[in-house]
Image (tube, rainbow, N blue to C red):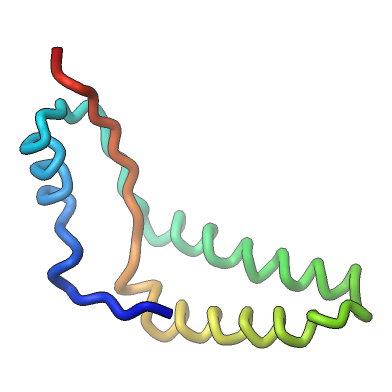
Length: 94
């Protein structure tokens, strides 16, 4: 994994301002809520469980399950409250 510092990220407002400073016009944004984030993360857990049920003899299954367990712990312990995502639609000004 890579290490990131807080100053490499901006706020929602700051992200829009970056676009404006680049000459773009903001048209739309959509910011995730906790339900979106839960759905996004837990569908990955579900996919791993389904893979395990359908491929119990797969040689990489233990590694996949271990990574999934670690991802679950990180998300539930810290990620759910700290991370999110947003979609930005910006247009080049004419």
